Length: 246
Image (cartoon, rainbow, N blue to C red; front, side, top):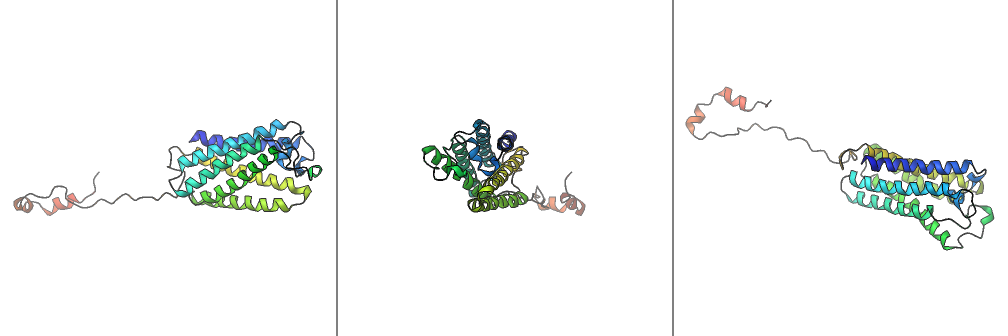
């Protein structure tokens, strides 16, 4: 469990570090989508592709870790399946390079002209909606404070997508980076959660119903065999039989 949690946390941190570094060393790239940093003709595309692949590994590790950590339920099945789908989508979008990224003004009318463009777009949609839906579904089975955080993350991702499509050119890249930070933070936080879980399905979900230890009952373990044995029992002996053990 610790290994899976650490993989998820480190993978999310590596992904953010890679695209932040790529944005910093390429002036003006914050105006464009992250996928523009590794589109055809971009310098050092491997830097962002390594980060996207790391996030794909992190999503897969998180899906396996939560599957082992959370109590059995339909929400666990659906949520972990959505994370697995998002992991596949991350590899699709992270390892496929656009011929011309649509957020770049020079690419207006030239986007989605090759199969690679459509594969990258399909992978991005799987990641976006897979993570958002998984966060909302898993919120029903996570502990209370994690449930609130997970639900807020899912709602924030969906709102970011709506804003992403309506934000004008100079700020479209900034909105996507906010969305990317929210996703990476959620993955890293849940990775940290399962890394502290020592046994499967034990500590990860406080939603598991707790059973109370039955109170000891005051019952004589060996009932008397005859009336004579019963008559010889004193009141002191009977009270001692009901006293709690050591």
